[in-house]
Image (tube, rainbow, N blue to C red; front, side):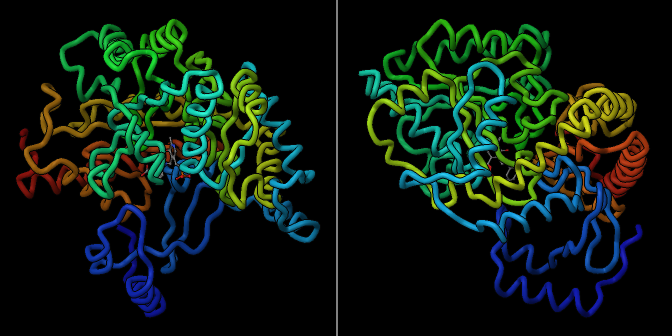
Length: 465
Ligand code: PXG
């Protein structure tokens, strides 16, 4: 444990933070009693806090810093654009060079005929755009009844009213009267958690066919679209069985259902291809992007839309939708520079051929740890399912999340940002990680798991529920 006691400067910032800053996804009073960790600098895959502690960031911020921290080229691109044209909108028959270049670049990178980009400020906003796009599309096609969008339980699509409704997070729905009308949610392809005893391939097919059943139940004339993350991120890095996506694709093809791939996490190299849709050979009509689009250096999200949907929307008259910051020039300039770096430095290839295989190999070793029920990876995403009973892969007797949170705190204290979802631990590191850095991440994970195991035993928490 290399944590030093808080300096007076840190304590003062913590007090001010507690007094005035409301944090996202946080129990405010609990946090304020404990105090925040204040991150002051970052380089490569390393974070530094206000007391000088260094931490290896196995989460790439919040799944977004794909090219790593501290790339001056992005700062320079932002500065140049701010001096040239810091802001202009794209509403009233106006456009500007960076947004034009970025739309073209994204159309080139995105698979199939995803050739048209509607810009937003975040992934949530982009998904709100998608709700309006797909409903407007069907209305323009003379089928205004096709309004229902099917998502998945434990899916995550953002935190606005619309995006949270698409998502299947029950705790979020309970706050604020969600989901909005005309949203439905099917079961997720979470084999470890929900497929016990079943062959994974069969489980994958079964969970995909839940979509077909739901469409039949709701009536195909009422269903506009299905939205899903190629791999669920916030839900706990749920990697679907290989049978899942081909079956989903078949169902969407056979029924008149638009497919929205939410690539906010899986985009821009995370799975070893530019997009998760390529990894899983999905042919979406719309793709949601954000995060890795700018490597998180500035906020930006977008919907990349296929020829048919964009053509219909463009022809229907005015689409009454847009954000002040749709296609913000500074964000667009930063995104372009980020994409240039990803491409020129072969970072997606590096992720696929160097970093991800190393992560997969080291992660597989963790499967032997007495606390680990399953260790899985896909590209630069990984999860560890913690269990008190390896043989039965049983859950803990303690309230769900108790052990995960314990482990997360121990990770942080031992210089590793690896976070928990329920009682699983997840990683999504910068794609630029070297093999040595993957090894360092692994070594820190082992130390943290050992320490967690020791603490759980000492406190009598290694008990199955
Ligand atoms: N779709 C997906 C798949 C996401 O992961 C969003 C949409 C929303 O993007 P914005 O930019 O509006 O946040 C996300 C965001 C977590 C966590 O705890 C994950 C996200 C956001 C906040 C927390 O893992 N993902």
